[in-house]
Length: 212
Image 1 (cartoon, rainbow, N blue to C red):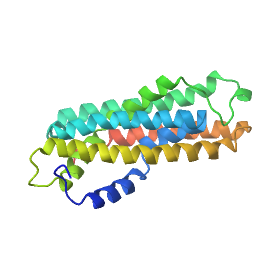
Image 2 (cartoon, one colour):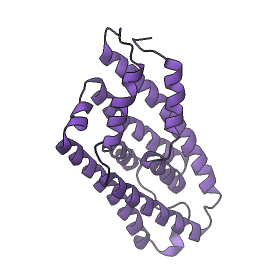
Image 3 (cartoon, one colour):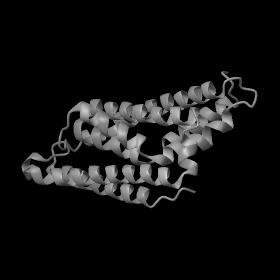
C-alpha cells in the first residue's frame, strides 16, 4: 500500500513504541490530572501536531541534517531541553502563587490553547523524535516505491494517528485516576511537585543526549 512493506509489523511496533514512557506521555498525564480529560485530549492533539513536523522532516530528508550536523542537533537539543526545564520550573513556581488551600489534585488550570502550544513544542523540539523517524520509517518503505516521500508521509501519519489514539486513552485514564484524589490537597501538591521535577529531569537528560 502506497509503496510500503510489512505494514502489520509496522503498526504493531508503532503501538509498542507509543506506550513507551517519555516527555510526551508525562505532559499528557500532567494536564489530564490537572484539568481533566478535555485538557489531556488537547495535549494529545498538540503532541500529534508536533509529530507532524518530524514526519515532514523525515519525508523530505531534513532529518538528515540533524543526524549529520552536530551544530543543528545541539541547537535543537538544547532548545528542547531548555523548554522542558522551563515547564518544570514553571510548574514548581505555580505552587508558590496559590495558597495551599487552593491547590488540590485538580492542580493549576491553564487555557486550552496554551496547553496545545506547549504540547506542540514538547514534541517538535525533541531531536530524538526526528532521528527516530529517520531510522524507523525507511525499514517499511518498499525499494520499488515510485514516490518514497509519499510513502514516508503515509507511514508517519499512520504512526501518528495510532499514537494519538493511544495518548487519548492514556489521557482519559489519567484523568479518572486523578479524579479520585481531587478533594485532597496534599496529593495535589505532591503530584504537581513530582511533575515539575520530572520535567526538569527530562530536560537535563535531553541536554546530555549525544548525537549517536
